[in-house]
Length: 628
Image (tube, rainbow, N blue to C red; front, top):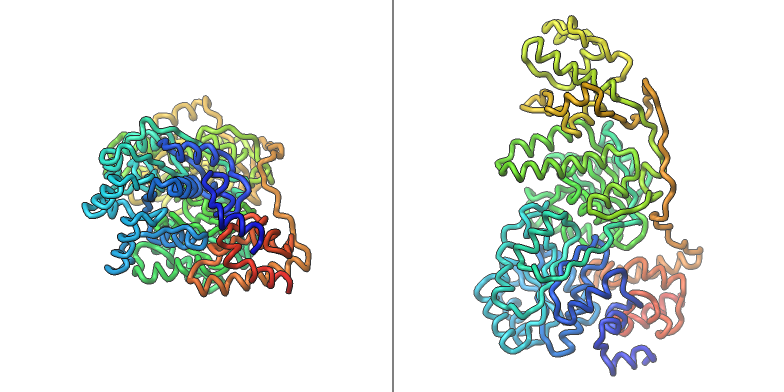
């Protein structure tokens, strides 16, 4: 037995740092993890905001192991998704940590076996959905553990689900306040990747975490490159993006509707991509099969509604694309954060246009929500539109929304290719005048297409039938292209100066339009691709910052062969254990093995991500693969 295995076999670690190294194979904590773990191990309550891929799971898994080894019992993890529970328990099993889940996927005998393990104090972590945890049977089991001093910690994952202000509200989360009321002495740790001030306050109130310590990690994901483009045949734009940047790599494509998901997945598959649809309208077995393929196979592109994604731990998703505008920045951040969880370069790509702006505003206005809620949602949408229309650093704006300052990143589309801009103030005034003249000429309202025809002096049947060629605004914008006019209108709607209503998205003026008409509010816009603007043009350049994560150190030819051999070996192990390959070892760990080519178990144990259990289980096999 190697020196590493011998030492760990006789002296299981009892400190957070020791558990991190022994069990997980990491040399040190990242960012705020150490402070959070120490606080929770000591029995403190906490609310943790940490980006996807930032290591939230370690913030409760390490305390769970430390407290269990100190005789303090089991940690109960509240998790909203069956797939997430399965992956987390599978990963912990690979690490040698006794863990289980209770959910509807278990039959009666399996569930009773887990309950016996739980009540016997043999489990370190138990995962369950909130509706399961709040049943009388489950609460009675927790009461039994509590009376024997074996209920150690409650970890509430995806805590934003408790907030009605959040982007993924789940009513069953509201009952979780019962945990504090019934077991006031048991510490609670609530975790989420996204929560603005309203949502944070709601989480604290609804979970009764007023005395909890708040930890807010940096929301920056420097390895993700943000790109937002204007819609111009979006499916072809998407295909070009995938083929140019991510051929043969895994990714997620988000669409707003089920129909669009089906059509896009079918089209991408016809173009030769391994694309699968996922939405709530599909049969449950089909959804599970598609998700399983995405997690276990390489180069699968999942085309999905927002029904897909929460709890997806796949580390090597190289891109997340949006074919439709999300509802708000929280949703955008949460969804794009599923890319590059392994810390390697990844892309967040989105295309959007005027119809997206109109549709999102209409959905808010037509909802049955209270006026205060609608007002908040409009503000959230406005922030996302400002990010989309921005011609300065995307990352600065994104982090600013969450109250964090940053420097231009050098790793978004605007930093890498600073867009040309033009002064569109006069064009905006002309557009608003055109809408006003329609109202004067008969009180009717018209859509963007007809307005643009009138402004450009285009004689159509509709123009002549309504006598709009006689309006003073007819032809006053002939020097501006149709594409630029759509950009102007999109910006005016995004800023709230113009609103679109009804089935035909007819345009009307808001009160704030007066300030633009009087020339008091300047309007400066990006120049669309391949368009030469009329008016004063400037090119704004953002200085290159230090936020962009450098690409990983490349492998030489021999190391590349070793890496391929290790991936083939990992695939066999994953298939044998019925697990996604990344749960056995992440790509980054295999790459480090291939690069370092350790020749002994002790040397292999020094590779990041190789804990004691995995070293014992796989060490000899890995050394043989590396030796060729």
